[in-house]
Length: 148
Image (cartoon, rainbow, N blue to C red):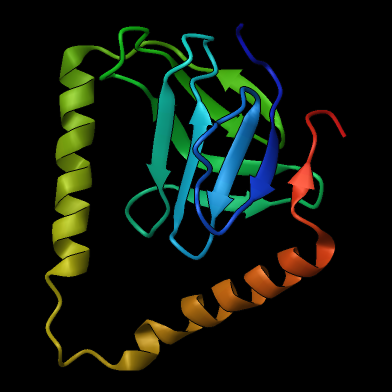
């Protein structure tokens, strides 16, 4: 069944059973997973990182950015998960998909082709912020239902 709303659950390990309408977020492993919102039932795994997706917590809701283009699935669905709602986006042409993939590749090359001479302080603040969010979310509880 097609979803227009979703909840979230913060987990350490991604569960074996993925419920429809729930975005599972593992901050420890910087990964999220959900069932495709079109209703096809496919698992959609999104890595979290500077050149991948980002998760924003808004209290009772969560957003995942940028959009999710399931170009490798039969459904080819495309949507954004924003503040507990599914916002449907248009289809992309093959040329646009390939251009997006090339841009992602270049971004990863630039990020991970750094020399060891860079100061460690460039990497410390995001990790400290992540640890703070993990502690906060564990204290607040980890499950938010769609529409709550």
